[in-house]
Length: 325
Image (cartoon, rainbow, N blue to C red; front, side):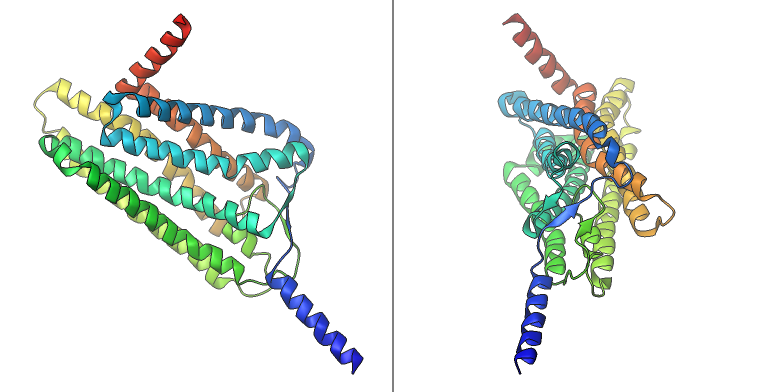
C-alpha cells in the first residue's frame, strides 16, 4: 500500500511538473558558442542604431506640428512596433552572448514569444495601412483629410492592434497546454512558438499548423492588399500630365516600398525555411532570424530619413540646432 501511494504521488508530481515547467535554457547560436562575445558586438551596435533612429523619429513626429499627418502617425506607430520587436529579443540575446544568462522562466519565455510575434504581425498590418494611406493621398488627394480623419485613424489603429492580438494570443494557450517532460534546452537565442513546442512530449500538429498557416495567411492577405493599393496608385500616377507631379508622387511612395521589401522578403524566406528548409543549417537559420529582429528596425528610420523630405529637413534642423548650442 505505501508503495502504491508513493507511485501515485510520483505520477502526480510528474504531471504537475510537466504542465508547469521550470526554466528553459537558451543555448544561443549552436556551434558558435566560442564566438558569442564577438558576435554580440555588431548586434549591440545595430540595436543601438535602431533605438536611436526610432526614438529620434518619434521625437520629431511628436514635436513638429508639420508632421502631424496620418502618414507620419502611422510611421510613428511603425517605429514603436520596431522598438518592441528588437527589444523583445536583443537584450536577452546579448545577455546570453556576454553574461551567459541562458536561463529563462516559462512565463518569461511566453512573454517574449508573444511580444515577438505580436510586433511582427502588427508591423505587417501597419505597412498595409500605410499603403492604403498612400493610395488615398495619391488617388483621392482632395478627400484625403475627410477620409483619414482622427476618428478613422483611431479605429484603424485599434482594429489592427486587436487583430494582431487575436492572431497571436492562441499561440500562448497552445503552448501552456503542452507537457514538457523531455529536455528544456532551446537551441536558439530567444523563444519562438514552434521552437518551444518541439520540446513537448506530445503531438504538436495543432501548434505547427496554426503557427505556420495563420501567420502566412495573414501576411499573404496584407501583401495582396498592399499590391492592390499600389496597382491603383501606379494607374493614377502614370495618368498624371506633369513629369514633376509624376516624380513627386513616386518619391512619396519610394520609402514605403523600400520598407515593404525589407520586411516581407526576409519574412517569407524565414517562415518557409523554418517550415520546409530541412537542408538549411540551423546556425544559418538562427543568425538570419536574429538579424531579422534588429536590421529592419535599424534601417526603417534611416530609409524614411533619407527618402522623406519633411523628415530629412527636420533631422538636419535638429542636429544643426544642437551643433550651434
